[in-house]
Image (cartoon, one colour):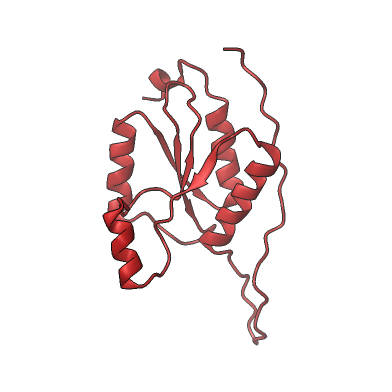
Length: 151
């Protein structure tokens, strides 16, 4: 398979909710949702052939819908995004998004990550859209022997 060069993804501006006026102005940190929206938009705009989709694990829902989703196979701890592109001996990339500051993996997320790695997937955590783009670009640039080198 011929190696094609991947275009670099430009940075896009994030939409951040307007600030409330206060005496001490703190710099707002984008939410995990906002960072994920920016990342997915950039990938779909600049790498339209890359199949990326979200796993709808988070969010508030009523008990009936939550039970339906669990019955349908929803699994706590699954990373936020799936990139269904095999590279470097991996079957695909699972990407967990976090805010640029704060946010940490839960025990369930760590456990699912270990299970996915054991099954041949590349699993990564990105703090923000920019870090997510860097992870995705590095993953897409992997060659066939990379998995043996990375372990």
